[in-house]
Amino acid sequence: MLKVIEDNHKKQNEEEENMMEVKLNDGNQIPAVGFGVFQIPNDGPTYDAVLAALKAGYRHIDTAAAYMNESDVGKAVKDSGIERGEIFITSKLWLQDYGYEAAKKGIETSLANLGTDYIDLYLLHQPYGDVAGAWKALEEAKAEGKLRSIGVSNMTPKICKEYVPQFETIPAVNQVECNPFFQQRELRALLEKDDVKIEAYFPLGHGNPQLLSHPVVRKLAEKYHKDAGQILLRFEVQDGLIVLPKSTKPERISGNICIFDFELTPEEMEEMRAMDTGKGTHDPEAPGVGENLLRAYKIHD
Image 1 (cartoon, rainbow, N blue to C red):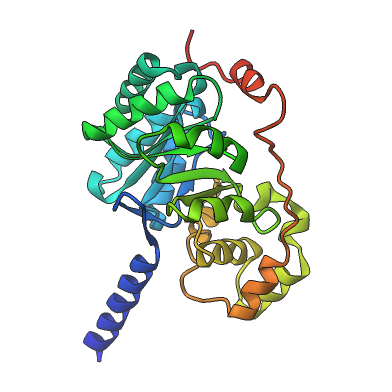
Image 2 (cartoon, rainbow, N blue to C red):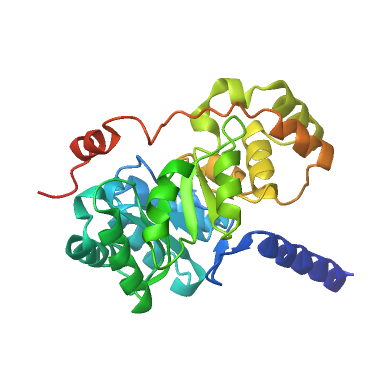
């Protein structure tokens, strides 16, 4: 009997692991649920949060040069006792390092900060400045094995149409704000033809109480004995998104990955899709966004 129970648990764990893997258009696999570290300080807090996330079962950590905490991520990965090949690390090139030569140096800095020979996914963090030159450096680093997959972030349909035709390599992902109130349907339709995956930041609506207390979300949370965040994340993953929830609270960190033991019905998925307002909190096309971001985030002199 004990062996049967163990076999069932093993089968369930394998099924959950398979559900958590998404195949990118370059053939690489990425965990569907990642742990984001935006606005978590370096020199301790990020280290502790990443260790807690890895202990809870996360195998995808999302950082960036502009988060100023790549070194804590690298230390936590090293100290976790988990083999490097089992952990998917994403980082991003900041605007200060755009342009071909500057981007090559930026990539090397990220590798050094993370203490790794390769980064699983590396993104252009923002779509401003010498995007084409920076992308060329990412393509070369990918060919050299320093980057396994490359992608972009904060690209709207209009911005995608401006830059992506200049690229020799189609991005593997586009990381953008995405949640049930802002489902990015136009962008997803555009990217679908090249199988570019959407990575959703702010998948919980940046803590928007109107989203978390929405009647549909409350109803489903009660039915499935889950919290509101788990319902949102389950919907997003089931709808084909890669999600990047963030928390520094151990109970929230562990809870956000417990979304593979239930499934929303087709009718419930449609109810969630009907929540879309088409409006987010960040407009990458607004005048002066690139300049304002450069002033706000200085990662080096």
